[in-house]
Image (cartoon, rainbow, N blue to C red; front, side, top):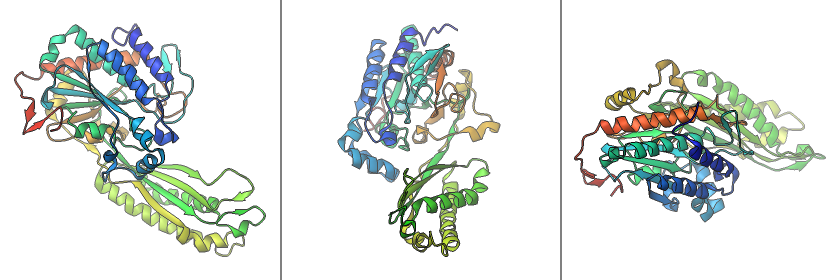
Length: 443
């Protein structure tokens, strides 16, 4: 397949972006080249006729919100001003500013999870961190918009298309200082498309996640006196196994997911580590389920501590650990009670169908996943997740992540078609303001 929209020019830009390290500071603990990447995107977008409507680092005040995960606040405190300055977000505009009812938004994130390798282009595939999640989809969508600007410029007389290029999606950031900030500033549309791999359909629902951190803070010792220390390795391994078993059945039901994450105490063979951390991540489809999860996790944690105390109280090696377990082990929620995406919109669904997009069928409803779309729903607004490839099949977040040019070309074509259908669906004459609020500035 010869790409006509996502052509060599866009492919070369994608390969350049894939070579730039844009790992989230939430994943690595240090800044990356997010700003430089956005500058390259802006340059090509401006050559194609789009304007830069917004390009700013998040203010520190963006963390003053009940939704902000504890880990985000901790990372910001650790990195200081570099945390914010290295993670700007950008909004590109096609057309003139319009009321949100005449605005279509495409959102994609430029930050990636940790783990990079030398990008390659082999047999029509880009193989690199961020290829599928989400540099490839975002750039393809942008190419589709630029194509319409070139071929049908009159479309943009009454229609505005905004492209969110955001940081702060990965690493458990949950979009709180990227996408959420843009939407609060008024950069939102009647239809808001989030470019994430969705397997050929679009989702108008998305889960949210909550993260439990279990920490042991005790006394360490050497291998010559192992009984003198609080053995965090044994304690956390026991707690992990017990909680996984206790919670497993509950999370096998529809719409719930549990990930037993990292467990870390140390990596030396001749030391008893008195401190360590265990992570659990839970997905939920509604806040009622989230509250149930909180309760179940607390019960499972308390039960695991009690079982550990009973089982090891008479052990010569671990009796100290058993005696101290409840005093030196704590459960902290680093994020919880964030909103989920649950929205329907008959008018926009008809438009999407006319544009050739298919809503997720009921038998695939469980495939919905967490992303920044949770912030875009609202009165008069419809948010969907739609992008090329599939998270699992394209190895997003894993070694060998890839996306095919053919997939990107198909997505660019789909976005171009969607822009045309969206413009055709709206009549002229809307004011820039609605109920006293400017839809472009939020003021």
